Every structure is written in structure tokens, then in C-alpha cells.
Length: 311
Ligand SMILES: Nc1ncnc2c1ncn2[C@@H]1O[C@H](COP(=O)(O)OP(=O)(O)O)[C@@H](O)[C@H]1O
Ligand SMILES: [Mg+2]
Image (tube, rainbow, N blue to C red):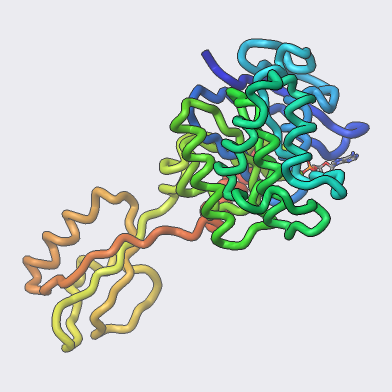
């Protein structure tokens, strides 16, 4: 069963902004990335799924329950983008009051609280007042609240924007941990590089619309480039047939070459040509495209197809 499912789900603000026509399904035990720049509609979408905003169109289900119902929220955890805490409380007190809100039975509370404090890397610091917490610590406590109830589905809205690189890695590890426990994590992020190592499937959103959807790895394959390093220090001439793959007008007689491929399957062909042209290849390195480039690729593709459709 799909854990999250939407059909043309739309939430606009007086016909403007928000997010439109989102159709997606998210399975169990994965980290799903909902990616796009600021203002593209990510928070609106998640708040609509959680029933905090009324949809203006379409449908949505969480664990088979229609969004907006109490049942659809029962097994859900949520870390809002801008979470304001009662900052006179200590971290632990916040979790205690949260545990009460989520009706965690009294005898399980303290053990569960200890567990989540450990999971978010706050052990030993939970008795400090939130007013004295750094942004990163507040974010960790927010995460602890989001997973306290051991939910099946966890929505994280920009969970790492306040964190330093170590904190970001911790959050990534936590997402992987949750996924490995069979949970579904729905991650909103504008930091494209961040999702690379954790997300299986993604939607890329731009100005309130989905521009691409699918397996992250496949969306990344917008172009393939390799760097060929030839052996020795002496410059070599590439055989002429290699020229068609060359990116730009690189000068002759060098030892590093960037080749632009239509397809990764061209690599063996190129190597064959090189060795029969007596070029000693020292190294072949695939070049990973910048995620921002991949993102722009899909945004532009969408614009082009809209142009074609509208004619
Ligand atoms: N309460 C609101 N009233 C009017 N417009 C809003 C409101 N909230 C968000 N928007 C608009 O909807 C669009 C998407 O916002 P948001 O969902 O916050 O995007 P993101 O989370 O991707 O940054 C933006 O253009 C924003 O200005
Ligand atoms: Mg947002």
C-alpha cells in the first residue's frame, strides 16, 4: 500500500502561489525527496497533507486515510520548517509535554524520551533550557518531537537548514536509520546536494508545479561526462574520431580531456578507439554533474514543453 498518495492535489492562496496539481505516491520504507527552491510550494504541500491547510483541489491519502481526518494524522510525525518552542522549558520538559500530547502511556514515556534524545544526538544536553540552545540543538529537539510517537510516516520540512555540516550528516544518518526501520520519510529540501545520498525517489518542484519525478539516480543522468587522463607527462594528440565527443574547443596536446557523452555506454567504445589509436589511458573518471545543473535542466525542459503545448 502507498503510504502517501495524492491525485492532482492543489492548494493555492486566493488562486495564487501554493502548489498545484501534485500527483505522487510514496511507498513504505523509503526517503522521498520533495525538492525545489524557496517559494516553490513545498511547505504548502506538506501542510496540506497534514490537514493544516484546506486543499483547493484534488485528493490526498496518508496510509489510506483521506487527508484532513484525525485518522490520517495518527501515525504521522512532523518537523515544521519554523518551529517555535516554549523556550523556558528544558529540552526534556518539552519532550515530556509532547509525550503527553501524543498520549504515550505514562510508564513508557521516560524510556522513549531517553531513546529519542539519544537518536538525535542530544544525550547529556537535554536538561538545558531551550532558550540557551543553538539553532542546531533546537532543530534536534524538534526532530526528537517529530519521532517521539514512533510514527510510521515522518514529514521533515527543511530539517537541516539551521545545521552545520556535522549536524547535517547526523540528520541524514537519522533519516537512513528511520528508513531502515521501515518508516517513510518525506523530506522537503531546497538543498539539492543534501538529498543525494539519502533519497530514493524525488519530485522536483518549481513555482508550484512538479517539473520532474522519479528515481533520483535516473533524474541525475541528464548528461554524462568523463575525464580521460592519458599516461605519462608528454602531451598526446587524440585520434580525430574522439573529437566528436569532446566538450568545447580544448586545445590540442594535453593529458586531460573532458568528453561529453550521449550515453554512458559510449565509454567502452571510446576506450577501444583510444587504445587502437595508441593512446595510453591512465585513468577514466566519470564526472558527476552539479545538482543545480540537473535541477535547471528539468526546470528548462518543463518550460520548453509548456511552450510547445501552448502553441
Ligand atoms: N499564507 C500564505 N498566503 C499567501 N501566499 C502564500 C502563503 N504561504 C505561502 N504562500 C506563497 O505560496 C508559494 C509557496 O510557498 P511555500 O509553500 O512556503 O514554498 P516553499 O516551502 O517551497 O518555500 C510562495 O509563492 C509563497 O509566497
Ligand atoms: Mg518551505
